[in-house]
Amino acid sequence: MKRWSAGLSAALVFALFALAPAPGAAQTPATTYTPPRTREGQPDLQGIWQVLNTAAWDIQDHAASLGVPAGRGVVEGNEIPYRPEALAKKQENFKNRQALDPEHGCILPGVPRLTYMPYPFRIVQQADKVTILHEYSRIIRFIYMNGNPHPEGPIDWFMGDSRGRWEGNSLVVDVIHFNDATWFDRAGNFHSDALHLVERFTPTGPDHLMYEVTIEDPKVFTRPWKISMPLYRRQEKDIELLEYECGVYLLKQEWQKPDSPLFNQP
Amino acid sequence: MRRWLFGALTAFGAVVVILPVTGQAQAFYRPDTPKFPQARTWVAQRAKLPAYKAPRTPDGVPDLQGNWNGPVGGGNDDLEEHEYIDVTTPPQESYVSDPPDGKVPYTPWALAKRNEIRAGLARGWPGETGQRLYTDPSSLCVNGMPRLALGGQEIIQKPGLVILLTANTYRVIPTDGRAHMSSTAKFYFGNSRGRWEGETLVVDVTGVNGETWIDSAGNFYGPNTHMVERMTRVEANTIDYVITIDDPTIYTRPWTMTYPKRRTGTGPGGNAGAITNAVAAAAGAARAADPYAKEVWENTCLEGNHDNVVLLKKLGFKWFEAVTPPR
Image (cartoon, rainbow over all chains, first blue to last red; front, side, top):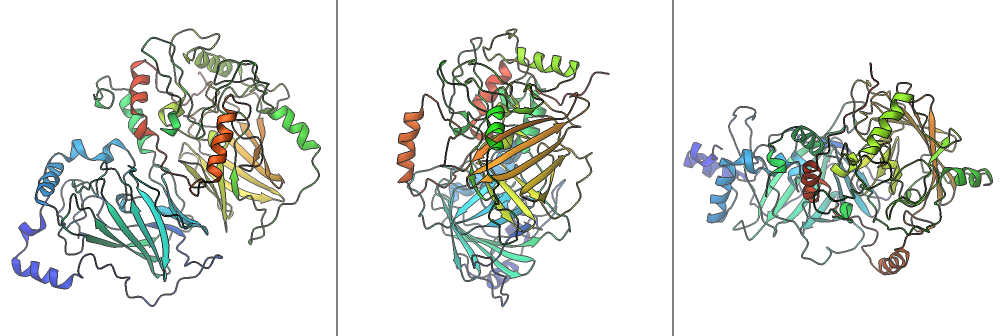
């Protein structure tokens, strides 16, 4: 990973910080767009969406390498405020990412990572829940809006427990009860089971949502930080979610290998 | 792991009971469990029902929305009629409503293949060879058509769409008249296209890959199989589910499975008649008071299944590939 700070002058760093809004101060993007309403009267965010960025590889600014497109990061200010020992672990993760990236095991990728993987997803709204259907491994994410608070913990879930509410035209989702088995990207950015997310999905036009996440994890980060990116409505006339059965493809491939580590781990 | 509630995996070499992934709690049955009614009984009941017109969605199509159970008994074991086999395999009628004998009309080679698969299940069932051949693909988290329909599910309707949700997978069925994808593109769940015919949602499924089973006992289809599902609300709380499966390369004629899907909480559910009924009733009462009872919480498969996958691999089960006719 090309740590961004190594390649930028101090002046440019200052300029970037000056331009970036303060992390943690999640603001609904200034928009005058008023989305249509569902029959229940909610802002209608339904449809098939997908990111168009390189956050799946690295949520920070990064150069290209074989199989990895270069990209602007999605982290406000680009810096992730790791605690010193956590930064060392992140660097180890990056060095050993081929072996350590949980994505290679086809497990549930966690939130927010699943949102910016390069697969489409469909948002479905009902009065008491928002359901996100992901093409990736046919994962279903339920965001409950039924008035129940987060269930009592401790609970260790890959995808956390999502409780949503409407703030103006934004869907705001509070997510806790994570495990520490997922990463943010393929570059080793990670979190602990103390992860707390506040996600905001804000329509900025008929075919765009602004997706913002405030990320808090006192075991790993010194302060909350924020990522943001647009989600794009897929425009193809007959777009539909197809199928990427990650775990099945992996098992099928490894089943034929007598020495596959998949079956020989302790 | 909800999908592996019954982890009766014993030491290597002993009888290993590998249970199918059902998405519902596993039930246990006594030898004197009455035979579960399936297609034969349901078809007779259905014939006596008065005509029913379902309420309409705001888009004017029949409203099938809500939470629905799978068939009585869970719908995962041998789909043909059978007597009591073991604690997880109660006696039941066939799911097959046509042909009338309740048997899957395999061609001779395909029947031999099905029987070969069954003889190598290593479930401790009568007639097994003791050799291990294939394990039920759903034991390895491989899910596909048409088995999803055999579990409980929530149906959601949106303009031009019907969405079927189970605890850990889904189908989205367009009803907007679009054409199928090329059937050269194969998927575990195929490519579904729906249309409304009066009271009935008709779903035409092409492009299946044939790599999953229809039950946990080795009944199979193939990559050329065509399925047509018909879902009709025949009572306020009952959906009549009918699936016709056709593949001249495997079967001598199209065949049909039929069963009722009851609205969750309104009648016999997946575990009716089980030894665990009293436990289920107590759990049901507790759930009625639980504000989270209607929520579906994280439900994983591969993530919690690693030990079982490793065991199945070490036991020597082969990976089930799609079956095609011998040349």
